[in-house]
Amino acid sequence: MSDAPWQGWRTDFSISNIMNADNEFIETVATMAETSWGMSRLTGKIWAVLLVADKVWMSAEDVMEAVGSSRGSVSTILRTLESVGLVQRSTLSGSKRRVYRVPSASSLIEVERVSLERMRKLMALGLRGVDEARPVTRERLGEYHDFMVFFQQEFEALAERWNNRSKESAV
Amino acid sequence: MSDAPWQGWRTDFSISNIMNADNEFIETVATMAETSWGMSRLTGKIWAVLLVADKVWMSAEDVMEAVGSSRGSVSTILRTLESVGLVQRSTLSGSKRRVYRVPSASSLIEVERVSLERMRKLMALGLRGVDEARPVTRERLGEYHDFMVFFQQEFEALAERWNNRSKESAV
DNA sequence: CTGAAATTTCAGTATTATTTGAAAAATGAA
DNA sequence: TTCATTTTTCAAATAATACTGAAATTTCAG
Image (cartoon, rainbow over all chains, first blue to last red; front, side, top):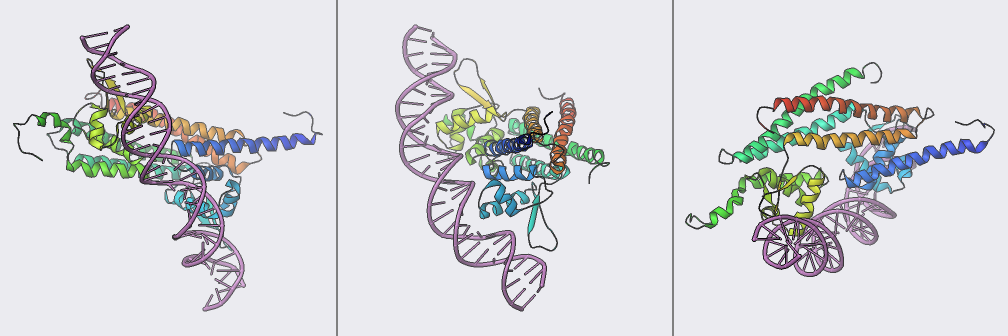
């Protein structure tokens, strides 16, 4: 890019480009979180911050500082995200601090697996009260149910392919 | 309720095919909607009612009656669900009534396709501001991005398999 | 076990979302 | 086009949720 290495501001400029880009990312995630994912804006920001941090692990205080919200909110949201599989928690030895990170892509597979199974069960529940006297309902719910089963099967194969594919590079 | 089949109202009440057995389903969907899917309870109920109705199409008034909510709410929610691909709308000839149904499973594929592409784009956006000076972020976002691309490719093949599989029965 | 450090909980408050019902707009059969 | 029917919009009321900050609890190094 630059042919003027003596100009100090260029360095500053590139840094602030990075920060602006991160901000746009964080705000975009926050907006998607509240408009499409049924999460709070802050939940989206926290997830985004963990995605974009150039550290492997962040403490709750790091996150707190990055999103500019209270200790209590950050604690609650991190735990919620963990319970849903979107964040992992650990402890670094020699400290009582818990540290957080976003899981590897292959862990996302597990999140999807859980949601597929819930959906399949839901369709099975709907089907329970539906007999031959209601052919329309039976076919509709039946198709949805079968689709979930199909998707589950496909998903297992897909997961395996992903894990094989990334075998050479990452853990 | 009445056991008087000579009374004409029975025909009018084909909607009451939505019986007690379905209530558990509707309430379960409603609860999942508000706890996990980021929809309102009423949105969940409306979707559930459309899933479980033994009619191919329902009018907004049918839905209104089934969920016991106001005309305004039902209208707004049906349009929102339609915009997201979870409900389809049509008009029966000779009437100014719009009618609604849940789409076939293969239309759900399109919903998923859209959400995968949004997610992929989001990761690409995150990656935009990240250079070699931030290897941790670059690898993490890169992996998420690659996973989305992988999933998109797999998903196309999967969709085709589903459509072939159900070729004999449905549209 | 102790106690400093860290996390979690929770009551209070602020904010946001949902729902209603009626008015406005749109629709389409005649 | 007309106009009764149907849908949509929107202001107001209500309900639900998110957020804070401080107190209570938990954690773990020493």
